[in-house]
Image 1 (spheres, helix red, strand yellow):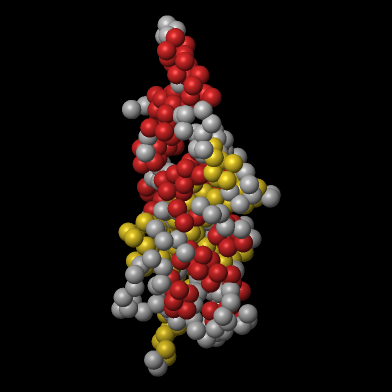
Image 2 (cartoon, helix red, strand yellow; image 1 turned 180 degrees about the vertical axis):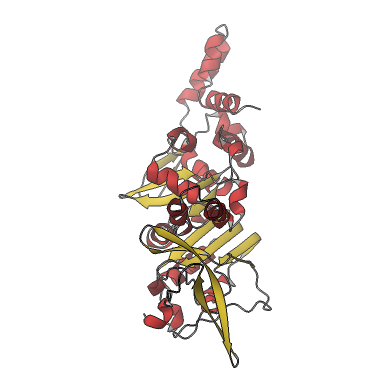
Length: 371
């Protein structure tokens, strides 16, 4: 059934008089219409004393159960661009210039390959044709390797028709419909957060009362090292822990994907996985729970509590590892290819960066400073 016809039927529920105008006038039907119009419907009062009209004169609310109404809302949310992208109802949520924005996720199925960007860089490196600096920017993006197309739409301008929804028009119909429409939005869409500030503000600082209705959540959190330090020194409070606690209060999550990374250590990607994952083990997810982590490399670090997850340990989530980086911009305007070499001394194994060209030493930032 076409979305347009569904919307027309929804409108007919709210304005049944339109149908009557198309038919010959009938004295009895006119009388019934006036009778319904003059009936005072019960009102529910909230704590502020504002009355909420139950709209019992509307066939939409009077005759249809909530399950059918939510099915109708689901049809209304369908758009003509849904079949073009990998996540048909994925919406990126971000706080920008004092306003909340939501944009469509435009990733393709191929973007699920976590090594896709570096594979394109391999082609450019071997052929000498292409812009390695542009792909390096995508590789180093804090939005993660899967949503670089979505980030570039926001940064360089976008076709706004792709982001169009009927959210606002449905929420403004009446006070009775507002909570039902918002609940349906939370239940039928995947919410994607690609920056920690927006995620913390949404779930912790100023949470919506409709968050418990959320069913699908995707977090791509590339954090500075200082956000991980509370896990290293066993501090009881941290903004990351507050976020985990807020997500833990969502009782009916069907799918959850959390991507964790660190952006201010260059290609040396290592986080205190074991400490960070302690709270994640307590999260309840009904179907799919995935945690994406940096590559498992023996990077030497001075800070304590930086142990990786034990691959033999049973966890309620599936662990996905990103491939090791092999390209980086160590000097402005120049992207270099490198490989990781390992050195074993006694029972300890460490890795270091070996450039394809040149014998420069690339220092390990974890050994240069503690915090």
